[in-house]
Length: 101
Image (tube, rainbow, N blue to C red; front, side):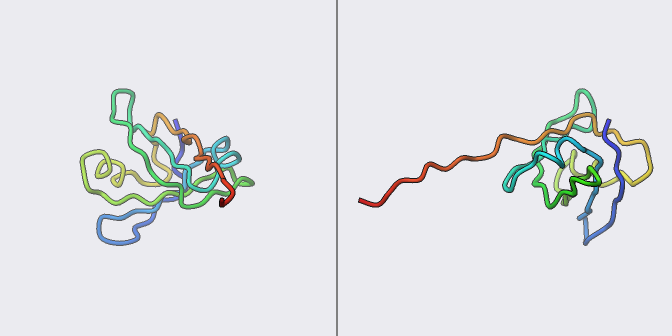
């Protein structure tokens, strides 16, 4: 389980979460995203990492409630037992550079 350190409302149906995920915070690279699952049998959803703080071991994500899973996620608050059972960062993209002809 991953602990929600901070949850704040940013706008209508939009929340920002700071999640304790030390391994991801240390290793994430620009362009990567988290794959979250709210419970063991829940849907896996990709969410862009807004920022990370490797020293604190946290990552920040912003979620807009548009479907069932994101609406359930936006109901979560800080300091409540989180039901986020899975969070991992996806493989970063690698671009092959070529020299112009």
